[in-house]
Length: 509
Image (tube, rainbow, N blue to C red; front, side, top):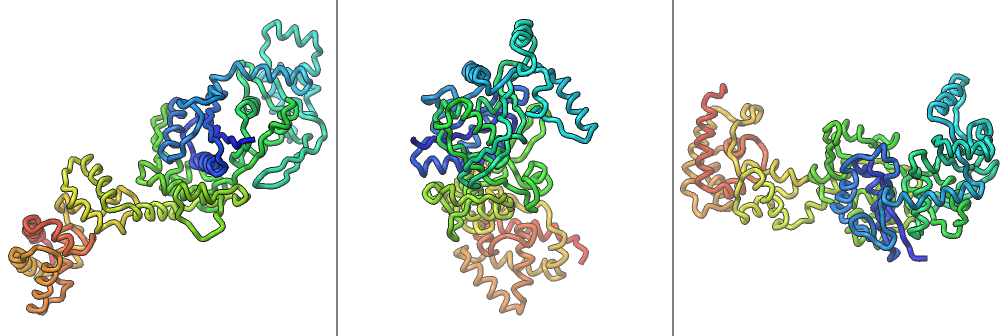
């Protein structure tokens, strides 16, 4: 049987990075095994459908360079790949389960179910529709054939529930967790088909996996409680020989290591939990995304790959092709993986450092154009070369070099207090004259001129360089000062010194 895996998200909101990791692991496994990676949109719960969520999922996969082989927009031999477009398929399987005695019709109203739940709570118990209560409630197991038909003919709404076998031990092998045993007496009779004529996730999921010839179901740990039902459904439908192998991925935990990572954690600590920025269509609330926060997709993919998977070596930087080559499910751990936002930043920094100055300059020029700044590409490339080691995000390109493109509008008070002394204006005037006659105007000649001035006047270099930096950039930051002066050029350097001296005349020393 050829390897066929699927990523099957529900379009109920933005794609969490835990879901993105699930997609990535499915993709890596499929590529390693020369198999097929499928995207299937599971939108049977129309009450939770969120407009734009499906497009968001597809765009997220595209941004991360995780292309699917079959799915919406692409099609494939088992189309359609959106469950709402497949709803005519599922009823026959629900009826098959009823006819074989593995499912039954339940006419209990939502209000009645809620009353049962409240009554159980008042007695300190938990209500679930299961073996212990199914013969006391309003369903085809208790009503008899004639009354059941009468209710159906009268148009009384009903759902179809799976009939969990009584008192069985179910042994299931998980490719990550090994053998797992479930007691069927602890399971409830899940709804398979709803009164609105649509299947629930459980039935649609199994039917589609069977029809699409899925060989491996690789999904998050949160689906483990559904595993026994899904296995029982395969058996009840007589498809146990076509049942895929299951692998449940570990959770991505909060930075503290306690509990599952949530959007609230990201909001609280200032990092994204979604691949792309998301605007809630109802509330207008905007959630940050890795793309808009300045992360490179290669860095996000590399970081996520090592959340739960161990390559078996000290290697940390992997290209996508290297991840495909190294990936195996037997190196995926059982325990949850703690999300480390600082490690995510580190990965992004490493990938930015791998970019050539030319590539970074192209990106920076685009950012400058957005600000209405036209800059010489050669100059931008030189600037990038000076600041690249300081860059963690692409947005840092501007933050670390804006002073090359716009003169100081103010001067950092703390720096002024620290470096601007009674003789600073006089020294700056001398330096201005010195630089005006420096030729050629390059870092070496500028450095030599400043050093000669220092020696001649017995003035420490700190008393020269620190105030000069303040005048040119507005603070005590930036790359080597002679590089700044060279790239600003003689005319702009002299202009900023003049303006700065004038602006700082009124400083109380």
